[in-house]
Image (tube, rainbow, N blue to C red; front, side, top):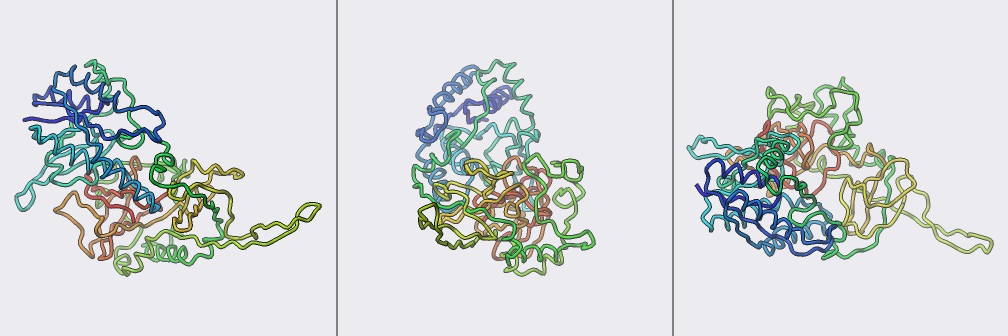
Amino acid sequence: MKVCIGLSGGVDSSVAALLLKKAGYDVFALFMQNWHDTTGTLHGDCEWEEDRFVAEMVARKIGIPFYFVDLSDEYRKRVVDYMFDEYSKGRTPNPDVLCNREIKFDAFMKCALSLGADYVATGHYCRKDEITGQDGKTIYRIFAGSDPNKDQSYFLCQLTQEQLSRAMFPIGDISKPEVRRIAAEADLPSADKKDSQGICFVGKVDLPVFLQQKLKPSEGDVVEVYDAYFQNNARYAFVHDTLYSLKKDHSSGDVQMITDYISETRSLKVNDPAHEFHAEGNPDNEGGCSAQSPFSEEKIRALSDDDFMRLSAPITYDIKFETETYRSGKKHVRKTRYKDNPYGKIVGRHDGAQFYTIGQRKGLNIGGHKDSLFVIGTDIPSNTIYVGEGHTHKGLSRSCLRVAPEDAHWIREDMPMLAGDIRRYRVRIRYRQPLQDATLVMRPNGLYILFDTPQRGITPGQFAVWYDRDEMVGSGVIG
């Protein structure tokens, strides 16, 4: 059996190649170049040239043929142009997910097959198996990697059954330290190479500079939103009242509206074992969820499609600022200032709302606050950024999101949700986030994900991915 290994020059793909060779496969390496431009890259060098050099040395060390393919045109059209388009709309795409769907397991795979490969292998930390469906056809399944610190299944959430049928993941059941050990023992040139960072095949970038290749800077206001805004906001009240009405047990108190965690590994309730993050879940619960849903399925089913649309929509900010004139100094010079507003304040300027994303902290450059400021909303038409102070700001947390019908993707094509279906799955909305318990509700106007507890920084354009225990079942673009 002939296997093409996508050899990147990193330690993961190098060990994958070595293991395939030792297992007796007819292996050849294919290195792909996907990017030429260094605009916005922090190192300023052509990183791919060094990667190719290392990859070629690895192939020589293992004793496998080495080939090179330039897919930069495909990458620009199918990944980078999509990035620019999404950012221009105020959305935040995930280029790594697109790179796997559009390049590694499409354009690259087609090239590998044309060179005689039966399968394409990569250095992803995930696992694959196959079962026979009720119709007798083979069903390919993909699982989280055995190393919970390096699980990369999220990045493969858009793969199809056809793509998985040709895919191999040789290191999916190995831990990262073990991969390093194998590489060092085999004296591979990539053994001590650091893991790549930043955008897939582009590298670590200054994102605003990178995006300015196509998106023009444009100054606008940064508006800080005060807590009082939510106390008088009809949509926020609707979300609160609806979530409260869905609870199974009202004796437990009010519904939770603010997330407990402040990062992927830190909780606000650091001394509360009930709020520690556990990736393993509970196999006795549907979907392997850690706990039973706090919401009643009967009450969820009773909500209208319009209710779900409103429940999943982010809070919008329409704070208006009025000006007043006053006299200043000994000469009583007439000046203009904004009147105090109980709902918010203009606290700074920015270079373009399209360069910022929900939950972002760095790059605002606004002082005078006890706690950090976070982006809680962007308005592209008015070129306004809305920010809130502190991890517990109400604008950072949401409990429900929507995936448009056309954006829901089922890896398990044999078990899609139909209108009216309600299921429990474990969900993550970004790479490395611990899996979160959630109820998925399919309606004609979209797939709704209702989390058991509020989630921080739900970002339009990113991918929500759902798992049944550790099997990745499907994914969708957050609307």
